[in-house]
Amino acid sequence: MILQVHPENPEKRYVQQILDGIRDGRIFILPTDTVYAFVCDLDAPRAINELYRLKNLSEKHPLSLLCRDVAMASHYARSIPQAVFRFMKSHTPGPYTFILNANRMMDRRGMGRKKEVGIRIVDHPLHRALMEQLDTPLVSTSITMEAEFTTDPEDLERLYGHDVAAVVDGGIRAHEYSTILDCRPDPLILMREGIGTVDDLEFVRQE
Image (cartoon, rainbow, N blue to C red; front, side):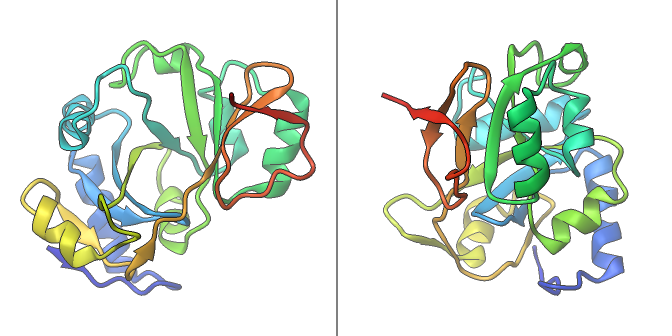
């Protein structure tokens, strides 16, 4: 099923439909400020296991947490360096993934024991509408079409429609990726240079 949600002002009935499905342990495909992504509830271990299956990922592969803001992110990261905290406050929501040390809140979640957590604070109207009503982050992993430069929601419906509650149509999206920063070492490591700028951060590039 494809949901045609308004791109700037998501209809309340669709937002509620997605929220109800997420709280019921269902998986959705949603547009983000970069590419499409599978998302589910952080407290839905069966759905999280299904994410790994759908992407054919090892359970050691990290998934991302989609948070409402830096305050929510701080509940799941053991510590956020001061320079990173300032950067997050000034650059999010936006196309960044911050790799941070996970705290004990993660041990009790469906993702299992993880030493690190990838934090995303997405700049998208639907994401904001959902997070206004959620007390915990969403678990996410991105989707792109192999050998293509764009992703069409109709292709996502054809490939995954029987595995997810719905595909939310965000239009044909280019494969633009978030900038990934490993914030644990000092200096930070730029693991992937995406569309998020890092000009005002001190970092080294991943070798």
